[in-house]
Length: 236
Image: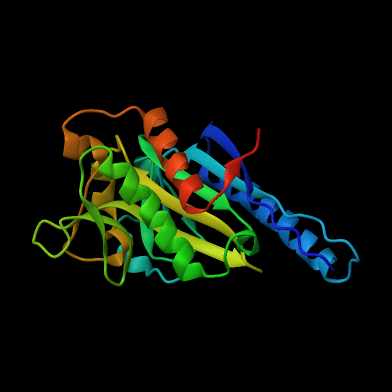
């Protein structure tokens, strides 16, 4: 069997969409790639798997990852309903986080065998994509050792998280991804212990710059850095 490496990425901005609907799309795309990989094992000629990158903005939703603790959600079911917030336990890694308006959420569904088979490296590349994007706005964002995501002022009493991440991979096909706070209403994070980390604040691009930032501009910068890091191209 000949292996076909495909580094073409299909970009889709689905706009504002409910969390569960986007989750279903991801599951479908992941399964399509996994099915192709299964068929390729016994095929004389391999079929290329596809790579996708979804941008989305969710209505208010709180999600709990596989390693998350329910006690990190500070609202009960009635309070969630009163505030119009949905809640889901998900199959991604990580703890608890919030998604909502003004936040750029990205879901790469990639067959890492088209790029590199290293989940640790994959997460570091996603972090680097965000770090490079924020540097274009004059922010010195960094990683925090042992804490996936992107932070500001790490190692100081003012450390604050600006981008959360949590992924899943099956047969080297990824899903879920990152959530970058751009013009996000940060009061929603008061209803959780973000990522299960006590005593550290959450921030946004708007809060750091003192002004709203165009979402499309941020997405454009993110995807440009993504393509460079992954040595990929967008599908025409």
